[in-house]
Length: 164
Image (cartoon, rainbow, N blue to C red):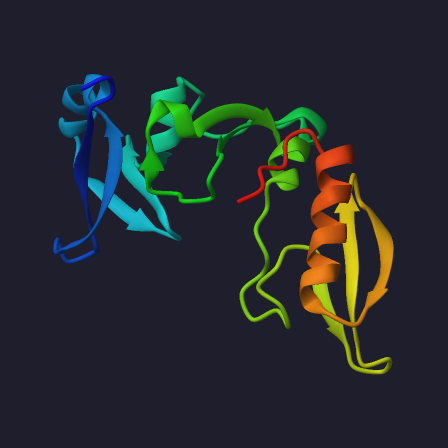
C-alpha cells in the first residue's frame, strides 16, 4: 500500500477506550509508547504534568502555543477531524490561519459555514469573519444559495479555508 495508517486507542479518565486516533504507520511506534486520552475531541497525553496534544507531537511543535498572540503557531486538521492525525491531514499554521478553517458552530441555525437564519427578515444570511471583521454577504431565500455565496467568498479571500 502507498499509505499505511494505524489506530491508537484514546482513553477516558477511568481508563476505558472511548475513541481511536488515526496516525501514519511510521509514527505509530513513537506514539504508542504513551497512553493517550480523549479531551475536547483531541488526543492528549501527559508530559510532566502538562497536556500534550498528539497533533502537536507529530508536527514537532512545542508543548503549547507561544505567548505572542498574533503569530502563535498551531497545528491544524485540514478535514476538521481532531482524531485524524495522519500527516497529510495536518499542517502548521498561525492562529489566524487556523481560524479560517473553523467549522460551523454546534447549535447554529444552519450546519453550513457562514450561514444563519435571519428571523426578522425570514431569509438566510451569508456572513464570513476574517481577521476579526465580519463580512456581510447578503440575504438569500435558500440556505444552499447563502452557503454557496459564503463558500465562494472563502475560496477567494481565505487561502487556509478547506471546503468539504
